[in-house]
Image 1 (cartoon, rainbow, N blue to C red):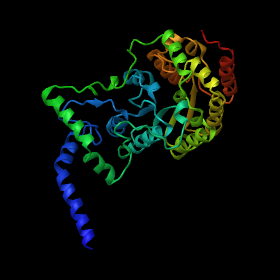
Image 2: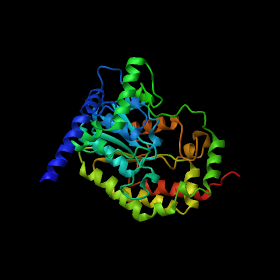
Image 3: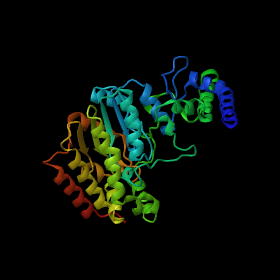
Image 4: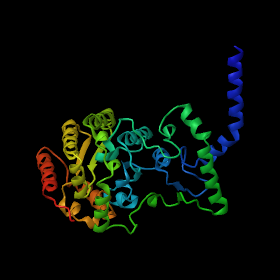
Length: 352
């Protein structure tokens, strides 16, 4: 009994000690977990795994796009105009399918969007079905969860307090931290970097040949790929029939598929596409767009900064295609599109 009382007193004392800090965090709310700020000009942080849940909860939108760094350059203004929707971009570098599902669940719980554009990146399906990217701060599970502990971990978190300090420093002193931006449209975009071109893509190809971490076959076993598809994609779609899911395969350069083929991983990539289509073709809330067999894009290496990351013009092409329902996968073209890509990989010769 005395032990329980002692523990209770410790917890109570801790909460009292943290009250001033948690009050500051609640008022400033640096990640916009509760509200869009009113007393200071909104700023946004580039740590996507922390910032995205707040954006999903509090921004005004009817369509969300979720993906990896391949989706970083979808500009909100362009999407708003092309799709005639109010959009939000919730991309995260190297996002796993589990991380994308967590983000989608926050979007769905917010009841703001009736449509989610969802990137299907083969690399996101690798590894365990609960794989997350741990930055130096760890993965912020609490930002994606519900319940009292989610709020306590946010409000009593030193990381939140640091961000609150940076927000106040910007507001009162005009000092902008390097991880902050004021323009939500520009948050985490990289389209203006001067590293696009064939030379950089071929350099990336050469550097990747002896880099096991680029595509470790042990992480791409079919059991992992299938489990990620089942738990983090198909279950999500089937559990939310009122939400429209627009799935798209990002147009890697032909060199990336060639690289995967050399690693013995390309057949599983094709198998995954077949598996997803067969398990979604009869669902009324799913559309699939496949851009990976479009030679005019994927064989023009000047469109890329490395084997996978493409220019903003390709992002715009994807959005325009979705608006016009072009490159939509259906029963009459699924096999042809897959065979197109298979043939392209077989016939493509990499420049020496």
